[in-house]
Figure 1 (cartoon, protein in one colour):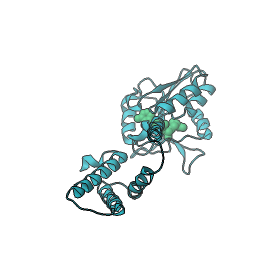
Figure 2: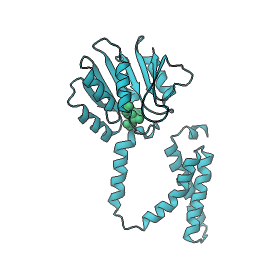
Figure 3: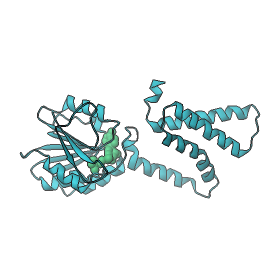
Figure 4: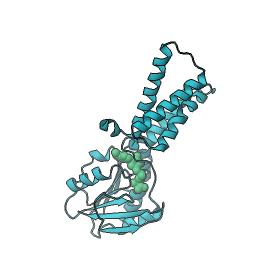
Length: 249
Ligand SMILES: C[S@@+](CC[C@H](N)C(=O)[O-])C[C@H]1O[C@@H](n2cnc3c(N)ncnc32)[C@H](O)[C@@H]1O
């Protein structure tokens, strides 16, 4: 069960719906005949029950309850099948990179870009990395204002990467890589920055401690490192509580 709970919520949600569906198929095979609406209700109730058992939050349970009815409504709607495929591919290209690591796509404010600029060491020849660079706003800005240094963005979602890559094309000192931040060796960087979610922070901090050289800096946008006190906290504009947490290695 603990293994199950370690799965990303989206996989647990899919598993709950699949198991609920399997139970209904087994029931139907016994010859049980019920009105369509009752089957839908059964699917919803079972999926919610299994989701709660798998430790999914009430928000997920609500979506799980709505899903069978939504699928039924769309089933009879005159929508060509390729639209679903296109939607799925579109979502995967924009959000796929953060799905399993449970990191959504949102952006640091321009105020955060400027405050980041103030947190870079003064010396030239710095190497900075944005781990999960989204559409590349911070990398493009920093590369523009610090032509003496190199700025790298790493992004796992293909479409998001493409936008960041195009945005940083005019900057010769900015480079956007398509790939996972977990496969990025941090040893060569002076500053590593990340704006992710609470979920990957313990593992990311462990990686930063392991790979960043002494004297380098780790900056987290808004998300704490459990059990660690930042050396500096800089409030920034954006969502409530937005701030840059600076850790010296
Ligand atoms: C919240 S956005 C941050 C954007 C940008 N760093 C900023 O500060 O504006 C997080 C980004 O991390 C990306 N991401 C999530 N997991 C990743 C991973 N394992 N490797 C690379 N990128 C990832 C997501 O696709 C998303 O674009």
